[in-house]
Length: 51
Image (tube, rainbow, N blue to C red; front, side):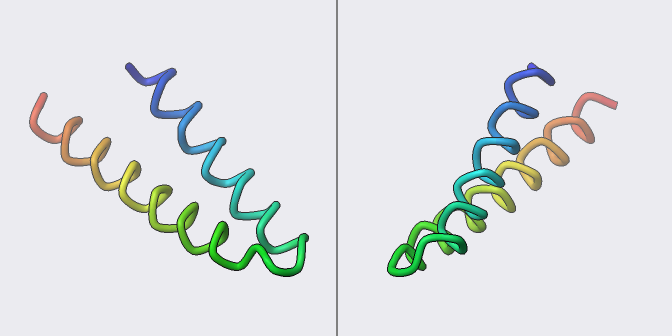
């Protein structure tokens, strides 16, 4: 499960950087940033519930 979360975070980060580098893809940056934060919060809540 940790591997999946790390892969998702890396994917969202890559898409956010790609959106910044390519003009006209600002929407990609916004969506990737939202998904990155949502995945990080979700994994934090999930790990806290397991304690």
